[in-house]
Image (cartoon, rainbow, N blue to C red; front, side, top):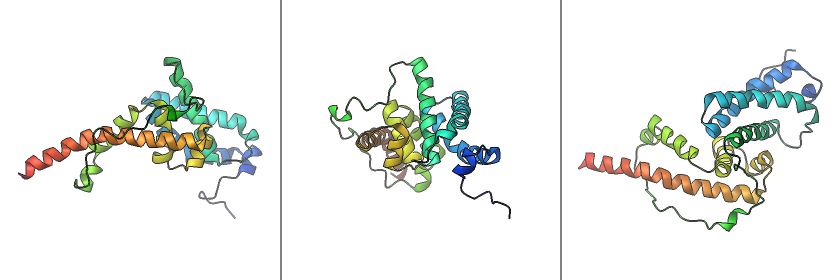
Length: 203
C-alpha cells in the first residue's frame, strides 16, 4: 500500500536516514519556518538563509533528536536560534535569555486603548490593517517578538513555546502579555484614526 502524503512524519524513518521522509519534513514545515524568519528579520534573503540553515542543521542532528518535544517545536527552536545569530551579527546585545527577570519592569496598561469593535470585519482584516500589524510586530523588542510570533501567530502552546525558546513558562507568559499590551497600544493609534475617519464620513 502506498503511503499517503498526509501520513505523520516518521521519526524512526528520519533516524534511519530516509531521504524521502526528510523531504516530506522540509516540504511540510518550510512555509512556517520561512514565515517566522521573515517576521523576525524583515528581510527575505535573511529568511531564506535561516530556512536553509534550519533544515541543514536538522539533517545533521536528527539522529540526536529523541522526540521529547514535537518535530515542529524542535525545528522552531533551530530556526529561532539561527535568526537570533543573524541579529547578533548586527546587534551583539540582542538576547532572549530569561536570566534577567522580566518582572523587574512593571506592566503598564496601554496609554491609548481604541475600541475598534465597531469597525467592519473587512476593514479589520484588510491588507492595510495586516501591514500595520506586521509593522507593529517588527517594532517589538526581540524577546517579546519571538514569543508573540510562536504563540499567537504560529499557534504553539505556552509549553511548546517554552521548549522552543528554552525559556520558563512563566517568562513566556509574561513576555506574551507585554507583547500583546504593546501591540494593543500601537494598533490603537491606527484604528483610532480609522474610527475618526469613519465618524467624519458618517456625519
